[in-house]
Image (cartoon, rainbow, N blue to C red; front, top):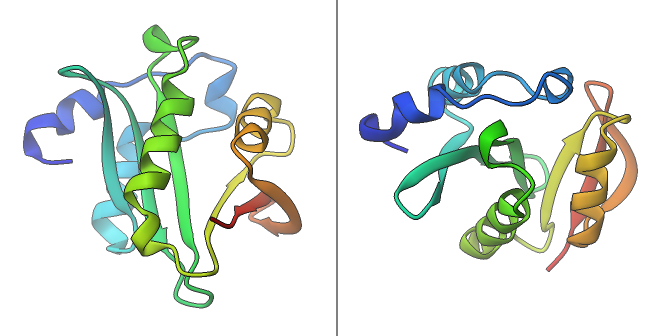
Amino acid sequence: MDAANRDAVAALTVTVEQSRFVASPTHYLTLCAAEGVWHPLAVYEHDAVVGFLMWAVDEDDASCWLGGVIIDARHQGRGLGRAAVIAVLDVLTDHATSAGFALSYEPDNHSAAGLYRALGFVETGEQVDGEVVARLRR
């Protein structure tokens, strides 16, 4: 992420149904800038911004957390979310200690749960802010 793609990320939208499960891209960008914990990444298809996600390393257990995964509504249904998560897992492998990767999602977000399970994430029984936590060790 940089100044050149910030406006494109801020303009991303999700479906009305998905808006129950994710915040706006501007919220995530503000979170990244304000707290200094989360690191923003733009998701590209060729030269177009089609999504966003952020990552952070947990100070307590050194796991690498993924959050704010968004694929623009106009670009959904083509496997871009799956491809983005796979790519970021590869890119961030060095940041994930033996604790691996972690993420969380709303309990009734069956689409996200299915995607993350298919990628090897396992629900742990933990919860963060009412969300289900799933972890992946690589």
